[in-house]
Image 1: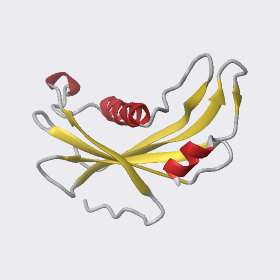
Image 2: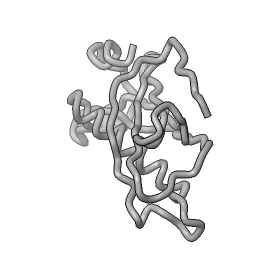
Image 3: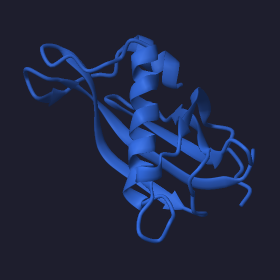
Image 4: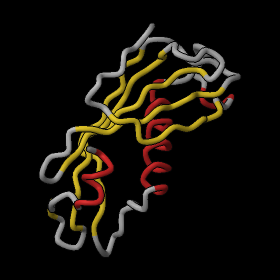
Length: 139
């Protein structure tokens, strides 16, 4: 399946994740829950790369909604190429999403997933305004 990237999305990160033998299920394809782990790994690596890891004594990002649409089955062996995008910064939130394809089949989208992220003051357990530096990154 060919997937067109909307103009309003901004690519912010890209990474390869090896498909592990243990990622497969009894049907000999990668289990659907593993796609969420791939998305999480990419999102965390991106947040770490921009210095936006959550600080339990301060503030940071929290996922409030996540989704994944499955188009093709990943199978072992191989590598998943994940391209992460960001958009739609609001007062306290932004959207992230990612395409997943096999590294050896560029341009063929196997799944698309994403998340709504809210910026939180952890001690207060309250949403706060998205910091300006983060808004710039996701705009």
